[in-house]
Length: 312
Image 1 (spheres, rainbow, N blue to C red):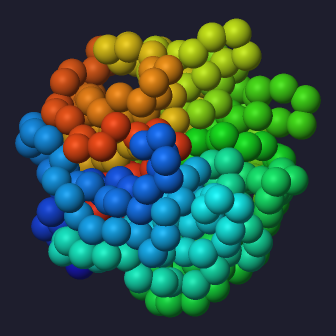
Image 2: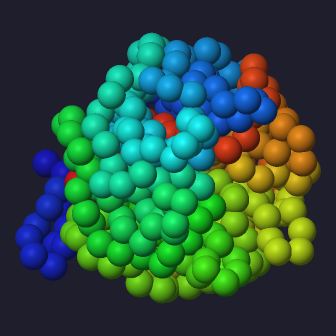
Image 3: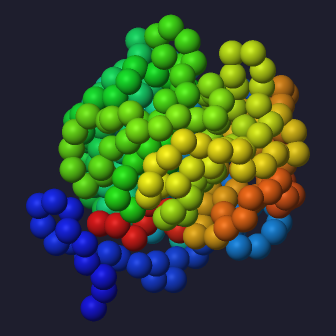
């Protein structure tokens, strides 16, 4: 009834968007004090964010991922680095519920990414830099399992297509890196270097549809970044400039639908509350979307319609 593909071991079936709400939810972070509040937007419209509920504790620098029904946040600091995973049901507002725990505590932005069924966290710090990649089956409850290893980096950014996940940039042991590292979400294994960002950067956020990802802002060793970068998730070539945000932005949250990528709040260098969006199909500068009720940074978002969905 639907398209199938061969993953090297077996034939698997795609699952398509079956009327998800196109809702993006972002939560946690610093306001500047740590907060547990979550806010949501409807990505296809314009307007201000609306209160969703609270996470189980006030934490920042968490990694997030989602299926078409659930959103998950893992790790973070409150004030010490921890390993809890929270989850929400994206279609209904309400407080987060305990899901389980990561294999180890992770802070300083563990990159979160997902397919339709599997959620993944990579990198971060305990405060020692973490090389382990964790994964969970999003439809279940329970603790994360070991997926493989990646480069020891913090403040990294993760993004995904329905088949592959990408870990982009970050701070390595010696300096910031522009490396883009790839995994295959349905199988376990170590990440491999496949491409490079156009600038050495960290502390950006990413949104994607099934073909293209956009990285918003960030920070390099010499300057804070206003520009956006993009690369193709299918061919995994080097990133190129997409356009500019309205101003410098780092440590923001991003959510996505199949047509739009949305960047929420962040630091510039003080916290800002504005929301901006881009259209994946065309290069260009970000456009005003609305505002969040809380100006915050060091947080992440998820949606029920992002580019990793449609896999298995």
